[in-house]
Image (cartoon, rainbow, N blue to C red):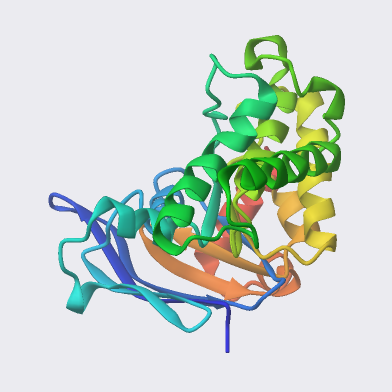
Length: 267
């Protein structure tokens, strides 16, 4: 069974149909790169996966659990949406760190809120039964994640003192702190200077080596080709091509895909 199944997702803003019957699957440990021109629906698709947008139709399933079914949708409480959102971690192109909090505080904030809610509802969080014990576990995990992204020495710094690349690495650690099933990236290097892009790609590459299941929207074609197991090319809200990096980049069967890649290669 696939870890992620997306079936016939449709999303419109008014009369503008942004996603048209989007379907794909992703196995545990796979990396999916989504490429395409601006406005093709890539970011909207990620936002639908993370419940930041709600599709009008379709179905989203993770590990056999149906998280969204457009045919059976009813008004859900915010707490229910937050619980479903935990299956996905989201790294935004603009970092979205809280400027008033230190690096370590940015990473532990969401797990601490989750711990309070879970302790209240079930009496247990990460194997412990008190908030004090939960806080200790959360802090230990945050320090491990900071080491993973190479920023242990910045734990007490504020975001304003960090470079763009460092801020994005903090954002990655923050997304990982909730232990998501699937980590999503929306153009993780687009807000960075070219010199800083490499450090983010290095972190993502290391996560891929650890078999982290990821969905990456990117304009970095060379990186997409190197790190992904599968590539989706989107155009006009439709999946035009879906295959291995070799199939999409080197053996494309679709003229629109070839045009896009040629324009990239010539840029």
